[in-house]
Amino acid sequence: MFRRVLLLVALLGLALGARYHLGTPITEELAAQYDLRPVVLPDGRGLPPGEGRVEEGERIYAEKCASCHGARGEGYPFNRLVAEPFPITPDTEPVEYAIGNYWQYATTLYDYIRRAMPFGAAGTLTNEEVYHLVAFLLYMNGITDADTPINQKTLPQVQMPARELLQLDPETKRRFPWLTLP
Amino acid sequence: MDRRKFFRLLGAGGLLSLLKARAQGAPWTEKTFETLTPLGAPLSEYGTRSPFEEGVVRYISPNLRTRHSGADFAPLEKLEGVITPNGLHFERHHSGVPQVDPEAYRLVIHGMVERPLVFTLEDLKRFPSVTRTYFIECAGNGQNGYRNPPDPGLTATRSRGLASNASWTGVPLALLLKEAGVKPEAKWLIPEGMDAAMYTRSLPLEKAMEDVLVAYAQNGEALRPEQGYPVRLVVPGWEGSIQVKWLRRILVTDLPAMAKDETSEYTDVMADGQVLAFTWVMEPQSIITYPSGLQRIKPGFHEIRGLAWSGFGRITKVEISFDEGKTWRKATLEAPVERYAFVRFKMPWYWKGEEVVLWSRAWDEKGNTQPTREEFFKRWGKNNRYHYNAIQAWRILPDGQVVNGDRPLGAQVSGPAGGCGGEVFDV
Image (cartoon, rainbow over all chains, first blue to last red; front, side):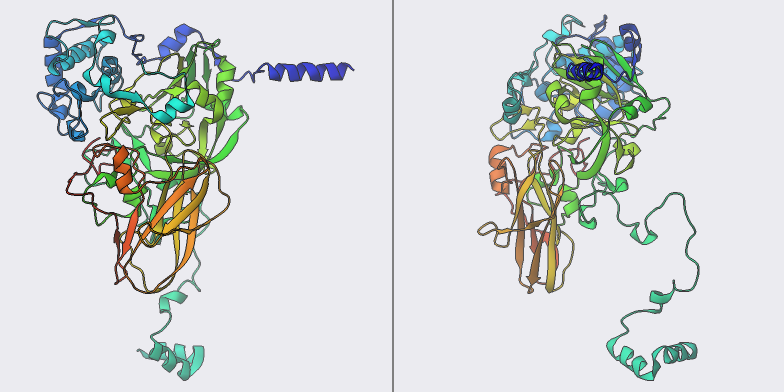
């Protein structure tokens, strides 16, 4: 009888999602230390304090980005970054896809530059330098004015022209009816 | 002929057989017998393929501007069966292949969880394990199909080689998430790689709870570095770019990141001008690997062979057409036919030497099949970079030479369209 009760308890435990007790619990503070280049979400979570200025961005761009993306972001040898602030059409060639005509979320700029750039020296930019570069690139693409401050509050509010083209894949919509694009 | 050879042949079979052999052109050479006396190679701790097979390699496009970001192609027409050997599995990475020390390796799960956890590789291996065969296919596979007019020198490798198939062993991600205790408001996971790009994507929690693997082995041995050693995600049926390699962290959250590689790349430009986000599921594909582009065949018997797969599930049927789609014949599927895995299809065929165009199309258990090029471009934009799955045609010329049989699409000229393989000027 006792055995049977034990078995029942064990089964109940499994049903309630029993754990293997593998892995080591850590505090949120420790997790934050491990989180070297935090994810920036479209609502701005993950953005650090600080503010970007276009002139500062221009200086950093010339030094650290222009050799790959062109003196004015026109591209070559690597991706073009600067375009007119009008969404692409089906006739736009992929080499013309850039921030102003294709990128749909301004927060992606911060996340990606801090995460992966410059190519070959990722993670060497300070949070402040990333803000400056984002301010410069948004300005160069005609999306913001030269004096628009770029920070935690303003960046998620920046509307990207290509956002109006972006739709959820119909198959994804069918499988995940709750899913919407930010 | 020297005297020694003459006497050896005399001893081996007599003068008559010598004369016979000369008359036919010898059916073998002296080299055929050369291993029969000396000792072969000794035991070795790690086996490698024959030096005569060293030409079977991944295809790296000469157009790539760097080899530290981009993709290379599995040599599909040089492989048999369905398993891609580990050294030939296609590669795709964004900042080079990191060399990760398994002792130093950690995986952190945090964010909207009851208990943030850190796992060592040993921890992960102690969980109940699962081994499954799954294809992984780059969303950019088929990128050469965007060329118009089509590239006459296309091979099966350059047509569909950004796909590979392996037996993956790992722990179901659902078990790790359960261990950490996902909070009810969580809907998304943001997995992150430990490459210099700290590559991230957004993955819906639902898919993770269904069948995603945190894999540490590939075809029975540890993952290859270019496949994410020591640990990667395997997301069955979905585009390769969401299957984050060198997995170091999973952020559990309530919004997708809209990361660079799910917005400025890996989004699809449609013919009507819309741009589709989260095009995760890979459509059905098939490719005839024999006979295929740049091969040459002789009249007589041939077994047509190819590979088919679909991100929607099991392949139910592969058909071959010899008349550009007017009539279709069912190919044989070689068992086992598994979900989200390559299947080998075959058809016996006698070639009389006439010019002919071969088509193949795969059907999956959800009733999906492959479009013709013309049908494909009604829906997808001509300047899209991903998800090309139109039927690949091979034209056999009367001299046996096989060339790309795809039809040009009107007067429109598109350069290489764009995509990770560098067949296209874009990284």
